[in-house]
Image (tube, rainbow, N blue to C red; front, side, top):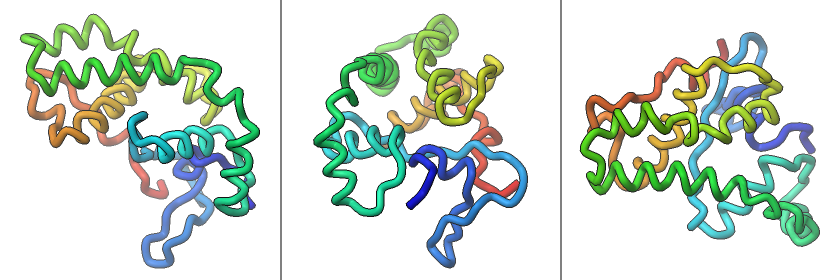
Length: 172
């Protein structure tokens, strides 16, 4: 069993491709990226939601049992509101509904990033983040969403794109 949640693995561990195992990070600090799971994915979405807040599962049966006894998991609709905000912006981008997506981004990034600081305070014990970092994390989330439509933020200049340096999975 582990003392880490799913979202803490890339922060405190490094994935070894050759051995296909997680090993403890020896030095440095890195913010890892996890695969985006849309709310429409059903069980996969709820599984990821549960794994992001719970730990110490020995097997899939434990996860299913815990899910049955965790009614508070979805009582706070914050997760859905944030997902809707990011998804709406992504859909507006993909559908070419925005004549100046960069202007909309500049005026709305703070609302779109509402959950970013909360997530990082909870998972990384980061109480303070710079605006640039919050923007990068939010852009990364939006990039993940529009990637599911076969698009990229690079297709919408002069729209900002996330800086890759914040998302390194290397053992620095």
